[in-house]
Length: 220
Image (tube, rainbow, N blue to C red; front, side):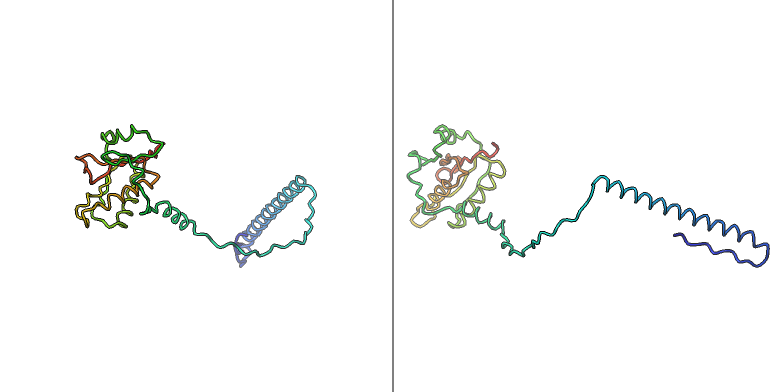
């Protein structure tokens, strides 16, 4: 409601006219406010009547007498940790895996998956695929080399690389001058599903100290 304007004070008969006009204006404002309030009540009544006519008779539902039980909630599962553990299991490369029987009897001791034709190895040896990235494992300890190789393969796949080079060294600095890491790298690569084939690098690409590896095509 609007704030009422105070009535003018009546001191003389000359002030009677303004007082009458003020009272008339205040009465008119009150009438208009009452009229507006009446129209609002009528509108609400019409809407309620329309709703009742549309819905029909309404009856309260009977209480079935059932009560919600406070059941214990299952313990939360750390989904990301589960996914990380599954990924770690997939990447767990065994050192006991015997790869010698799977290698091709050629100079490079190449390897390919059974579903991959021999022409793939021929093209790999010829250098038909350009080497897109490489990792150097030479001088690393076994565990460091295994982790670095897994991380490298993941990153190469993420970038869409198919042909990569893995430098493992010739083992000249190893005890007995035995290339221990060379055999481990071959074993690890065979265990990775993302690896399609590999062969010894050509002389200009590292020779006996490196492998050229073909990865699966993730763009399909």
